[in-house]
Amino acid sequence: MTVRDPTATPRLGDDRDPGDRDPDPGDRDRDRDDDRDGDRDDTLAAEPPGDRERREPEVSSEPVRLHKLLAQAGVASRRASEELITEGRVEVDGLVVTELGTKVDPQTAVVRVDGARVPVGDRNRRHVYVIVHKPRGVISSMWDDEGRPDIPSLLPVKLARRTRLFHVGRLDQDTEGLLLLTDDGELTHRLTHPSFEVSKTYIAEVPGPVAKETVATVRGGVVVDGRTVAVERFRVVAATKNRAMVEITVHEGRKHVVRDLLDVSGMPVRRLVRVKLGPLALGDLPPGEYRELASAEVGTLYDLVGL
Image (cartoon, rainbow, N blue to C red; front, side, top):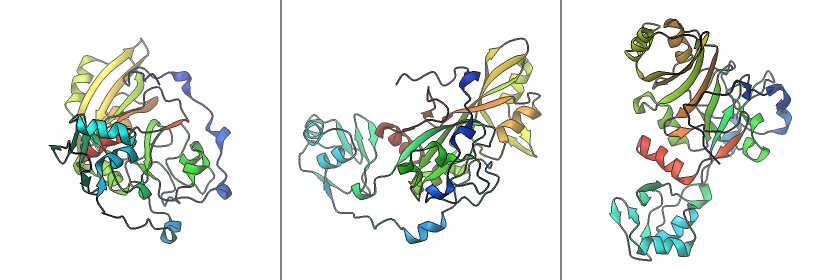
């Protein structure tokens, strides 16, 4: 897949009619989200009632041979993993391991190949990590009582039926873009907790032109509802006489914080797309589509939040 520059101006023709993909509530056994409005940002999805009957199995901490662990994590075949080890390209807990047959605890070991973090764990509970391009009009919910298009309506049945699939934060109904889904509860918690300050980058269409003074003001932080919202990055990426496309990166996840921030700054939002979450980029993933994360991408998330 050719990844487009995440700062590139979104194509206004990318919208698709979410009504064409209405979910069938009777065809899925999955999460019921307690939030009916579906537009609170960065709130952990509630555990569905059905999960009380389907708990994850206890995790074994039995040591596993390193080459086998690498193969299970999808790094390479067992033989190729052995070669990685003997070539000194594998680290465990900060130490280079070259001896074949070395065993490690998959639940505690920090494994890296060529410096890149490799998430490892019990093969019986390998987690799912998926990003979806949420179109406008879709509710950031794993279930909607009103029958509106929701997140599972964008997924194949096999994924939609996973009972512990969380959406990491939210996008309001009119906001498009990157939404991360996973059944990794600890990673979800850390990515959404304010103390980890995970960045979110958006492209917004606003009236143009945008004055240089406005750019400087936004970069200095904007007061929204009595609190100053720190802006990590703000720039104009495209402009015409009547409109502008601006890129903004913030750490906060309060409801409508980006829309409110830009509105307070004299730039009412006409369209808003989230293009990055931490190190993850939306790239050229079309609206309404999804893709699974590569092992290296999951590793960058683990490093980001200290797992």
